[in-house]
Image 1 (cartoon, helix red, strand yellow):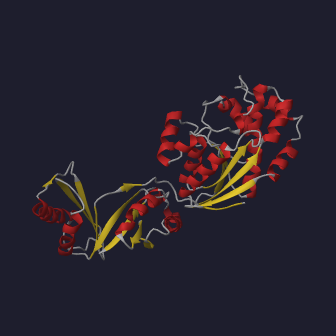
Image 2 (spheres, helix red, strand yellow; image 1 turned 135 degrees about the horizontal axis):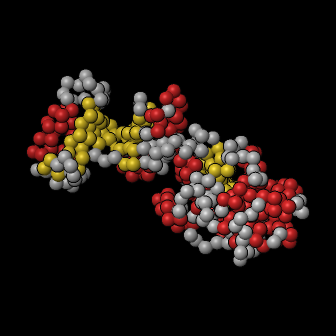
Image 3 (cartoon, helix red, strand yellow; image 1 turned 90 degrees about the vertical axis):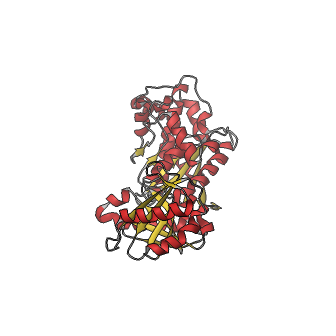
Length: 393
């Protein structure tokens, strides 16, 4: 009896002529995601992907890896037997021993219409068999255990539980983006959302070390490593912002300093993005959440960019963002205390309705290009792979 994990997609089924390319990317990602777990083979069917396990003991680890692979809508561990009901009856007793239940339901799907027994007759036959075997009752609405059968041309697939994946698109089908990763709650969620839409994400973190301690750098490294489980390899660019901040503090009224910081961050991130052939910048901003995230201020920040700036959390409230952060495993790290670059010299009353003309005039006294190039010259890079870092660069 072969043990397969059957993966079903949702969005990929709607991709028309491009579907084979999306499916190949999903297969490739699943191969990477499950390496070292006991998966013998990853194969592609017409509308699904299958993974053959060398041993059932591999299932718990495979389950976690497949669940985190974008493009997977749902999946299940299944048992493949030759396509006849007597063989099904011969293996069911040992499979049912693994489950505790007082009621059950049989759900048969005769995908191969050449199979001589109709789905409803399979349900009745196997239902009577399981009832006599276990003494459990049939409950079609709220069963303790569901027993699924898919009748295929060469085999019958038996399974008992469907696991939901995150859906979305396989990482790599939508190009590369550069995400600002602050170490807080929002930016890791924003980066994860773009991975879910098929983007490969480079991380960019701005820090003020040695003006502050290294806590924000350490947190961001942990977050980048964790997020790599969803895209298998990552780069984190660590950018020193302290010298730029000192220049801004000397020449800029306190109310405008955060906006000035953000505009420099965008310039530097865009330069890194272009070097990596990324197509957009990603931030964790949500409309109105803090002073720099008013529509007026967002417009001022965007004015220095030529690449699109994507804000996947723009319509989220804080509770919604926290819920996602908890579910993807970044929340516990994000709430650890740190000293990030924007907490340095924070004004008591920041400007909330800035104008591009005003901020441009304030910037005109600074050697903007020179400061950007200096920061780029001092960038350090860390590389990660799933599940461990490759090296520091």
